[in-house]
Image 1: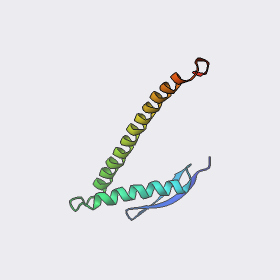
Image 2: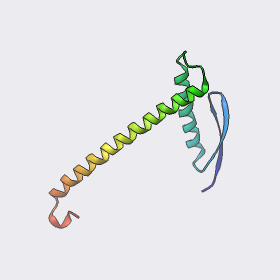
Image 3: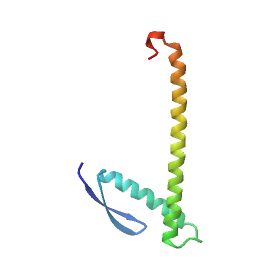
Length: 95
């Protein structure tokens, strides 16, 4: 894979990100991070950009963990349904 250099702006700071993913993906990730930090900075009690970045990282990680849990739940339901469907198949097709 080729390496792309993509310029992004997060909370007013410009960064050049080198990665193998398409630039559009890198820009979307940066926009998500920027939005998360800006949301934290809406709280007037938080003025330190470092603290805001940590709190935004916590929020993004919470999103990730919730999505993973939901994905696991869906996979378990699909496995259960697959077992039920197998019972309806003729014995030679149950695999």
